[in-house]
Length: 340
Figure: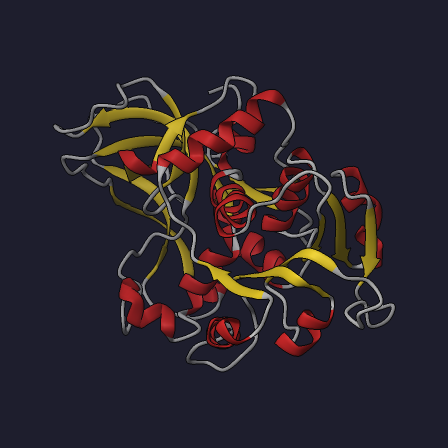
């Protein structure tokens, strides 16, 4: 692991860098200029960074919708990947009011796969004392996505039947725990080898997605949360109660232009014409959601799940394992050792 620097006056840092869109082969570890904070930003001494699907999409530039959404048309606008972050504030901008130097924080940063990263203060919260830096680093993006899907886009309540497709993945592990904490009856869909893992999160039942057509309508649900799935709307609607809600989160597959996002747009277009509510989620990155997630993290009803930890110079391995389905829950990059 990279040792903490002792002189803050240094102007360079070690970081994972990427100059072109492509595979993990485009990633390298280099010495780069340390970022400088804007008025509403803080500089974070990074202790750990989370690995998620969003980082993979930003690395590959696929689907092309990513590029035209402002992340860079021909190459990444941010040459240092990484979003989820946990660390210690070492400098603040002139307009920052929520943090002071020395605060332990977690949230969403620009370029988290580095020794230092900047972040807008509205995308950060104080790290709960009961979490390690590694646990905090994998909580924000997946956690607030699941929380918004269950409480903002839908309204999960006591006794509702909830089906979570992709229950063993990054967002799924939070969705299972949160739905359970909110009083729902939770059924998770995952690979058979991960069934015990999903049950350990609090799922009442687990379905092996390869064992048969679990969307044949023999069981119906109040809410279906489809995380990164590739199921057609027709099949999803068969397993949804007549007044139920479908929330599509993310999405893999599809074409190189829109990826799985096309399915989400079709759901929105169809929803006004059917009794079921068919919708999608684009997560809001704001501390009000991180603060709310903290309530579940502090009382222990939600626990971050780390399957694998990697050194900063093995970020390419972390993203490869994620893309190839070898990660249950979350993977983390440990930038500084616990001793620091």
